Image 1 (cartoon, rainbow, N blue to C red):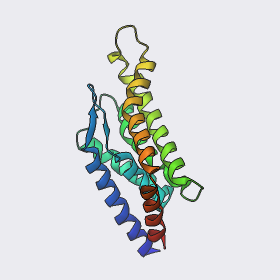
Image 2: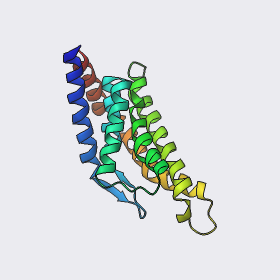
Image 3: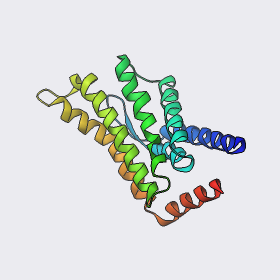
Image 4: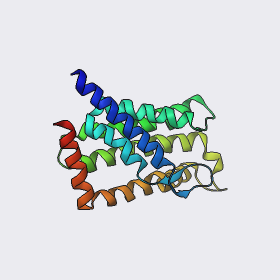
Amino acid sequence: MRNKNVKYLVLCAILIALSIGLNQIKLLHLPFGGSITLLSMLAATLAGYFCGPKWGLISGLALGLLNLAFGGYVIHPIQLILDYILAFTALGLSGFFTETKNGLYIGYAVSVVARFFCSFLSGFIFFGEYAPEGMNPALYSFAYNGISIGAEGIITLIILAIPVVHDTIYRLKKQFND
């Protein structure tokens, strides 16, 4: 059991570092913060997918706290919880789908939708004032977060559908857990 925990700890640390690194590759920078990055959420969700929900949720929380430490923007304690603690911890939900058919896709999609929901709430509650005049703040938050989180989610799902990518991740998971 001890060796397994060490193995999980090391893998999760590597995936967190990979997610932070990939987060620096911005495909599109949005005007008020946020961006579309290259597969950073995939790296974060793989911790749960490979190691299970406990490790995935802890890794997501660690990633959120690191993102906060590396330049987070906080205007209210609840916004901090929504944007950094809950939104990133949600990426670990992928661990609940590790043993299901198409668990890679389902776990990733559920994790991204949960992160989107947290960011949507934060955007609606705390950043709705940035909505263009006459635009509903909920619609603004939905569109803004849909562009940043949704676009990366769709791009990643397309990349995951490439057989060599999909097969490699499944093989790595199997080798890691043997």
